[in-house]
Amino acid sequence: GGPAADPMEVAYESVAVIGFWAQAVMFSTGSLVGGIMDRVPRKRLLKWVLCSQSLAVIASCFFLLSASPASISLQGFRQSWLFKLLAASCVLERISALASDVSLE
Image (tube, rainbow, N blue to C red):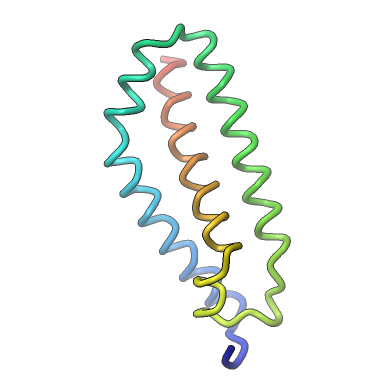
């Protein structure tokens, strides 16, 4: 509901919200991911991490293309299931990127 917002305003504020939560989740789950990385063979881990990172990027693109910028209000987009899926895929991509960087070192 409500009047349609400027699509760029929706984009900027959504990126800020997702960026904050992605960093918060990375900070809170970093030691868990590190513990898993220590138990799994590096070659298998790297394959899994790179696949999950690629799938998360593809999912993020799909979720963004599914949103109709002309009819989205800022509050409505943040409360939609599409925003939650986009945020989850962005968080997965960030964690996978961090894990792949560590495993390639």
